[in-house]
Every structure is written in C-alpha cells, then in structure tokens.
Image (cartoon, rainbow, N blue to C red; front, side):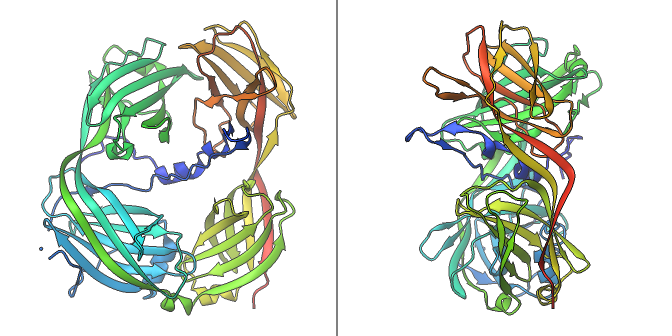
Length: 545
C-alpha cells in the first residue's frame, strides 16, 4: 500500500451532506422568477488501493465463492450489514471476465426503500500503490435507462480484490425486475505530483499554467484570516471534455525543503466544490508563517491513469423483492409537526430489514428542515439518520439505518422522532448596508441583524469587491447571501467566494461581486440563519403494540 505521507483523507460524504450551495439565490432567465439550485452531487467514490492478484465474456456463476468480510466497507450501512448477518439478501454470485479482469456481483438487497448490490473486482496484476477507477459504473433497467445511484469501494489487501457496493434509492414497481449492472473501462490510477511556482508573499491572485494530464491551469487566491492564518482558495481548471473526477482528489500540498516535512492545514479543508463548468475549487487554511518560509515549496497532487483496460463488463440480473417483502411494514401516519414551517407532517413510515424511511409532507415544493441531526428512538434502540428532498414533490424523506434490530421487532415497538440542533432561516429586513470609500484596504462596518451584531468587512482585490461577514455571537449562523439593487429594483446577487458547511459553528462568510469598479455600494442581506445547537424536537410517531 502506498503511504499517504501524513495527509488525512477528507470525509467527502459528510462534507457533501452539509455544503449549502443549495441555498444560494439566483435569477432565472425565464420570467425573472427566482430559483434555488440544488446540488445533488456527492463524492461517494473512494478509489480502492490496489496491490495485486487475478478468462468468456458472459456472466457465469461462481461455484466456489470466497467468503468476503463486508463489515469495514459497510460500516456506514449498518442496515445492509445487519441483513447480511441475518442471512437475508438475494444470492447472485455471477461473474464476467474480460482482459484478465473479473467483475462479480455477489448479493443484492431490494426492498421498498432502496436497492443495494455487493460486488467485487479482481483486477489482475497491478503495480503497488495504484488505485482502481472506471469510465463508468452503472445500473440500468430492461430498457437501458440509467438508474441513479452511488458507489463506494475499498481494497481487500488479504484477498487482492476490490470490494464495493452500489446503492440507489430506486425501488422496483413490481416484485421482479430485470436489470444490468456493469462497468466500462477500468483505469489503473497512480498518484502524480507536479511542482507549482506559487509565491505566498504576493497578495494578488496567481494563475499558473499546468497543461498536463487534463489539468489546464491552477488559480490560487489568498485571504488573510484571524490569528495569523491564511485561506488558500485553489481553482483547478480542466481541459474541455475532461471529467474533473478523473483527477481524483486533486489538491495542493506544502512542504519545507529543509526537513522534508509536509505542512498540515489548520483544518480538514473543503475539497471538490464545483465551480464554473470544468472547474473544481478547494479551500485550505494554513499558518501564514509556514507559508512564507523561504524553503517552502508547493505541489499539485492528483491522480492519473497509468494504463486503461478498455471494454464493457456487464451482468444481467433478475432482482426480486419477495424475500424482503415478508419483513416489510408500511404504515400511514398523520402526525403534525407544528414547530416545522410549511404545514409539515409525518405522512408515512416504511420499515424494511435494512432501513426505516420516514416520509414528511409539506406545502412547499422545497423545504429546508430546520434541524441538523435526526434520530429515531424505537424502544431502547436509537437509530441515526439524515434527510433528503424528493424531486420537488412537496416531500422530504428521513432515512435511518437498521442496527441490531429486525424489522418485525421494530414494527411492534413505540417510536419517537427526535430532531436536534435547530437552524432557522430568516429574511433580511431590507435595510441597506453602505460600503463607502471602497479600496484595496480592508474596512469594516457593524450592523444588527435581528438581535445579533454582525460585522461586514469589504475590500477590492484583483478587480473584484469582496464582502466578508461574521458575528461573535455563536447563536448567529451566518449570512447566506448579499445583493444590491440595479436601477428599476432588479436584484444582483453576489457569488459565494467561500464554501460553508451548515451547522459547523463557523459563521464567517465571504461574497464576491466580480469586476466591480465603483467607490461605494449599498448592499442588502437576502437571508441569514440562527442556530440553537442544544434545541431538540421530540415527536411520538406510534405507541407500539
């Protein structure tokens, strides 16, 4: 296994669950109506690290199946692991081999909440330190339509194979469904490093030509932070028709030449935020002193394909819900949630052997639930869960992984839905905040938003106007976005210059008005949030049997 050289791998899944780009306001071209873009991309793919092991291009049964340990891979999918330990799941054990590479689907879980496939890939001989990626990994129905889903995979060093799962919220309409699971083009990825000539003593933005392995250029911007820290905002720009995910976890690393010591960022950082088409944005905070040491060097680190095995590996499946239907319970509810806006109520409860799905109904097409964490208390057991919108259908779903309980046991227990860490959204009051004598010098003005003092700091940098906001009151969650008014009253919204994570305790925000030359500007607050981390909402759903 290759060394990570002391650099922690970020939790992309948790990060994407919390990035609040879906709360950024914009103007739609049609009719001037407002819209809210919802970011559904989540970085689930974690390429499996490969050491090595190891033909009929038709799927064949695996008669002497190896006993795989799935517990590490399924540590965040306890419901699937619980069902597997209980002997549930549809045995597939079908394989297809091409170019010495074998794809196997081992087990399928299909119920009223989701579809999950457990698969493995034997890549054949590989070089130490490489990882495996695909041109595409997909599940399609009998008409060839792509079924939306995510996958996660890890390397089993003992067996020399990749183990993974594909997960989709797709639920078949009938008891039996014909599908095709497959991969296209297997990439053997390796880590690459490229020195970049960034000057940390220069405050202006620096655009660096890269021109290799699909990365065209790199734009680095620096922003002073509190306590001698500097935020480095790195914008990676890729070649046309190059998919940014092909570069893997692309990032900047910093090293002191004198002792070969890699400088760690002050926080985990935010990686992989989509920018303009063909752009990926990272944000990392470093010590200003470390950055400006004379022997500091900067490298761009990314993944590239050392070689590719071209082809398609496909396995036809017949998935059945019959096994899971025996332990599936659905119950219509009508439990109002008066503390949640939009006339929200708990509409339905669906219990399967792998997961509990709680369906909420509300009057608005899109509703941001004012809570950060959710638990389902079933008797003495507490299940952890999260929320997701359902395609603008006036519905929100809460999903809880089964953990240590069987569905028929759970169906008879009293249940209480507990929501924690309240976050409320508020509209700005329409009061202008005057930014005057705008220059490269940082200037500040303090105003009140509701009952909270908020400081706005503004300055011109690289020809753009930046507006930062923050509050020393921890109950203030942050300014969502600012805007100014054109003649005629049309709102011009700022763009976010700093990604923020909902509920992380940091209320610092930064907006940018690009190519701004005026000397003054009245800006307005569109929305802001307030937080009550200790506030809980407890709602009984059923009394049990």
